[in-house]
Structures are given as structure tokens and as C-alpha cells.
Image (cartoon, rainbow, N blue to C red; front, top):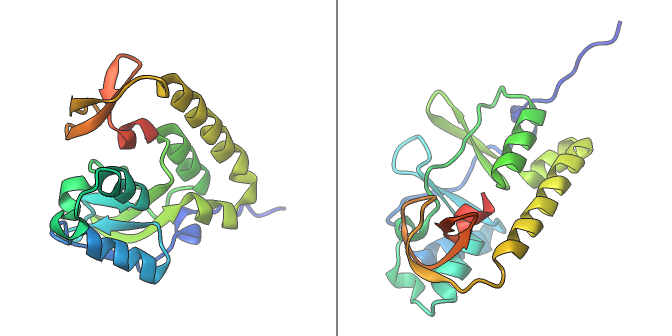
Length: 183
């Protein structure tokens, strides 16, 4: 009789996540990412995550607009409405959630407390056979990217996250920011 050894999110996640307050400056966040060689930070005021800041956010929302990183807080540019996952969830489910929502990072939350982060790299390191799910997601992202590539950006309220953005793109009849398009 063969034992069923399903991998869980807990098996693959990175514990001890570096977190920052929404009041942290973008410059400080960039310095922390550089120092610890990570591509994102979880933003929280209490135990539960309230946002996520990535290198891409810093480049697209600060650097590309020639804004001063020390004058802007993470709370102003972070991605909100995070999708999270329980540490006991099946790793296949996590990979499907990431692919379905076009995200590469999932905060791992247990009873309202942040206990880790699961990245697409974590999934691939522990379970290479899930590569197919994540590769298909990348293909779909590239197809979606091609749809809006030639449309000029506009300013307004993103219909995905509700934030005012200078670089909204129309995609499938909705005006979305880069982060919402990537989801």
C-alpha cells in the first residue's frame, strides 16, 4: 500500500517574512529588498497583511515617474486586496490560485496571522511538476500583455483596485493599472 504524501503550502513556503509598515518610505523598502536580496515586502500594521510592495511597483510607480522615493510611502503605492492562503492548503491548489489570479506571491495566513510567503519559485523548488501550471499562466499573461501593448495609457481610477493611477490601460473593456492586469 502506497502512502499519499501530498505537499502543503507549509512544506514550500518561506517563513519569517520581512514586513514593513505602510508608513515606510519607498527608499527604505528598496534598501531592504536590496540588502536581503528579495523582490517584495509584505505590508502590515497588525498581524494580518494589508498589502504587498514589489520591485516592479517601485519601478513603475516611482522611478519611471521620476518621483523621489524618500518622499513616498509604501502605503501610497502598495498592491492591496491581497489574496492569501492557509498553510495547510494543498500546494497544487496554491499553484492554481497563483495561475488563476496571475500572481507570483501568496501571503500565508493562519487564523489571521501572517506565517510566511509562498512564491512561484518556492513552488517550483519543492514540486517541479507544477511547472506546467505556472508556465501556462506565463503564456496567458503574455497574450493579455499583447492585447493592451499598443493602447496609450490614461489617468483615472483603476477599476480593479480603486486606486488613482496615471497609467491605466483599457483591457477587456475595463481601465486597469499594471498590478491589476498582472493579477
